[in-house]
Image (cartoon, rainbow, N blue to C red; front, side, top):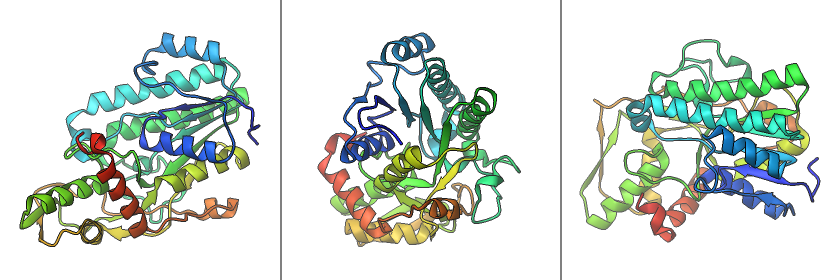
Amino acid sequence: MMEKEAKIYVAGHCGMVGSAIVRELTRNGYENLVLKTHGELDLKRQGDVEEFFAKEKPDYVFLAAAKVGGILANQEALADFMYDNMLLEMNVIHAAWQNGCKKLEFLGSSCIYPRMAKQPMQESCLLTSELEKTNEAYALAKISGLKYCEFLNRQYGTDYISVMPTNLYGPNDNYHPEHSHVLPALIRRFHEAKVEGKEEVVCWGDGSPMREFLYVDDLAEFCVFLMNHYSGNETVNAGTGMEVSIKELTALVAKVVGYQGKILWDTAKPNGTPRKLLDVSKAKALGWTYKTELEDGIRFAYADFINNPCRAER
């Protein structure tokens, strides 16, 4: 269990996941938090990261920092996604180990599971077959971070764990029209279409892929839960265990936003992985399950989009 007075470093606290973890820690009475913006500490610079850890010596670390984006962003910046993520995660994990960090939690992503993995995906399916090509660079970087935690445990007896979230959404998301993930991109697209009075909205692919979505505050609750109640080399899936087609999701977002025009599909654009559903039996066995239903979460996310114009403009 993390002591209430322990020094806790949340890497990536300005992002969607990191900010949710900070909210959850604060809600649970953890006040000795170390937070650094990218401008204050560039995690890609090894020397700066080593200096930071040597000075602060945090007891616990949540590694939620990452360079993220949707299909288009991953396709346009393959090298950047791999290089940036490899650098920042290795720097943080290694410096944590060098400076006696009691426990570290690494945030992975369900996109690192094989493209055609048996559904729902168990934690054990990692590295059993080919990855999804549309985000291969990001996936390889995330796999490396996850495995580095495991190897440190095996070689040096550290207590470094990892969690594998499904598709996330919620406050502090990235709503960029081209570089965001599917749900925030849909929120922005339908909101703008409603405001501009557009008669139709064109979406990528054919709407057939099945996806699972978890509200980010639910994930944050699980992250703190795991830090206090789980140790082990194998990652733990974080999801709802429920799925929805992209076509159904699109209709739901349009409903929440209040858009009443036509929805068209550009089948020349890629669909991505045909189905992605996590097996969450391990999380349930540990005593955790999600709380926020999808339509409620989308309403919360849309309110965040509306009430935070600086994020809506990205």
